[in-house]
Image (tube, rainbow, N blue to C red; front, top):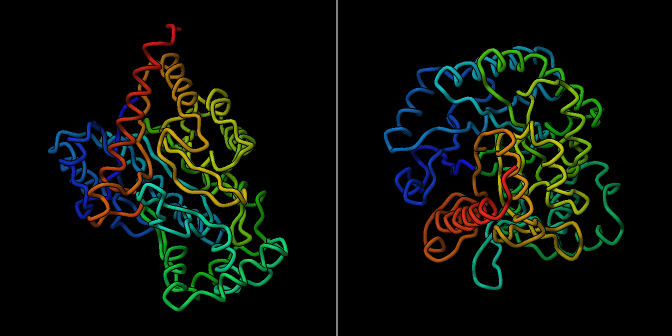
Length: 389
């Protein structure tokens, strides 16, 4: 695997020098200052690439070019946003950046309710707590019709939880869910969030899937001409939130997307943490089935909690993901395809000196350093023990 590291640009507390010392050789980043829906200028791409290369690294993957909400809702004029997206792909490829991770999650990107959940060993991690999420949806956002999405016991638990929250807790929960997590494409107030949800009225999973196909029909030819590959990221968490459809959550969803186009450029980001939240996802089998279309790997582990809906970020070799089995399948895949897939350790714990430093939520230095070292060790062991194909 090509060992990469997510970097949020010059303002990231973890520097390019830090990343090189951690042992990564590739960078995963984006032009985060570019407004959603605009074409990324080749000059800006070149400047960022040269900055990365000056540090002794390569820009391996773009994560992400934002997909404008108008594209997902098929709003009038959505095609011009898709055409702008395609031009950004062409400009990136012209500068040698040819793996493009993107997501098609409606309204929100990845969602959590806690950014610094304390674990028994004192480390801190990201967490999604179903009761806190329900309390926000039912009693803070007060979404119309939300009660239909929860069992009576869930509603009552959320009511009690909300009743015990003070104003500060409510504000923190609200900000965590809708103000935009790292890499997210949008941030909202309660009012603008309600308005954005309303734009999805009448859009179900079939309609959203159809719009993804329409988007790909515009952008895939540009990617193919440029020699680029697209890698859609799974939903996080991989289930419906706020009554919104989700279409990249399981093996059947991957099959539906693969069927939209036979082009190898129509590919996947295989995020073990996102897919691993669902107990019915067999990750090694999914990787074996769709491996020819996998262009990027997010390796992390999530741990499902007792209620079956909550989860937190586990250490990279713990949790519900059989990382040894996943990496064994990756090694087989790489040998068959004769390439090294870019991989990044995702969502590390805050630990040791990370606890005393400001860092981007989910992206501390030492926690990811630990994860990268563990994943590197598993890969080397697996590669040495697996017979040659």
